[in-house]
Length: 520
Image (cartoon, rainbow, N blue to C red; front, top):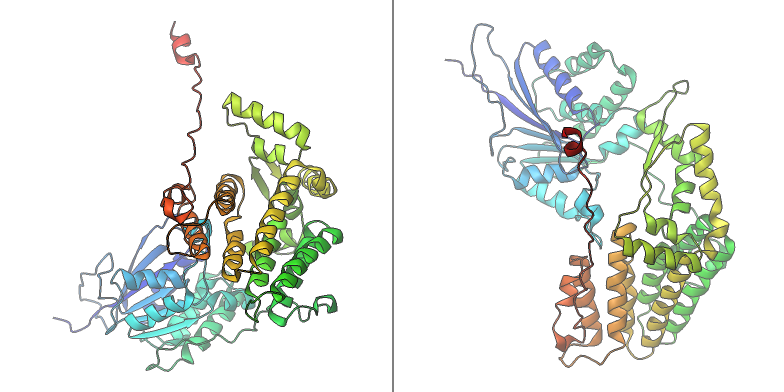
């Protein structure tokens, strides 16, 4: 009986990151070293709800004539090496019990690719990166964490090459570095870039002490955090607020024009002046909240903005870089758009938009227009550019007037609360978090936002809670349940006993069956 024991390896990679290529490289390197290797894969789910996993077992020192029975899937607690291209996937492996604190070495990228649930949350649905890292360190024998995505972008390689280098640099497998590199060369694809990515991953993993459980940093250039300086026109604000206002101002200029950006600046100044005259803390939390959420709100998404962003040279260049297109290689970009009646009514004048909306509601039909445009064609590009060039028309549109009126109402509530109740003013400012997204998501968030503002005009709560506490609870309920059911179920004593939204009629349309007609 042989004393050789298999080394079990679990790899988690997202779609398009080359997880299959990595598993193939690893198998090649093992077999070239005279080891027995077996691998299987389990497809993941698209749209970032999961990852494709690859499971390998390598038997070092196995004699040619020996026969081994190897597993086809990982066994919880029996994994020697877990490699992940993304932080959350490594944490999921630990949560499911695959990672053993006495056995498993975890190599993972510290960067994040947000899940659908994180991006679709009404509030900030992101997981705390530091808590994820701490969980990995706690439940693994050794953790090697660094930004593989940054290393891949810097070297021009796929992230799988960086992962491969990290596996080699960790020194866990009894395979020489030359065997790893030969596996890349034998594949015959993107050899130079892959070797650069391999070297970056190898250096990052090698620099980690085997006994350490702290994260390491790949030797890649740091990314710029933003503009190097802030214009003098924002010097009236304290440093932390100044940076926010500068970014918000720049966003409005890019979205509309300088006049619109000046309007943003005037609104922030209004809140800042009121807060300085109140008993607010010196760090001006209300002004910071308004500067952040107002910048996003004023630059709301509409089809004019969509046309502008999708036809920008920077976007097309970024797409070429993401797909790895060479300068002489053509890239075709196709946009699949489906603007509904609300999107079209939003850019029409109020006098036309309102009756058109009423007609669409009475008809009960989900009116929408399916568009398939090729951005890289002359016709498609010009159509998007023409749509984006309509920004001059935006101030005359129905939605522009609606948004500005609601913004002014929000700011007035904050200014009214500041002199006597700073915590309440801050909670009202934080309600700006409810305004986000587009389409149905934006409509639900706005409905909850208006419901809270309407309730503020009612009588004070009869409970011992302050109005600030009540607004905080109402906002939390709205963020947890975009449909508004949690908000509607708040107790009457809170002052926010809101009626449930009335059910919307859904007309039933009857159509003659074509199949029945053909059969006659």
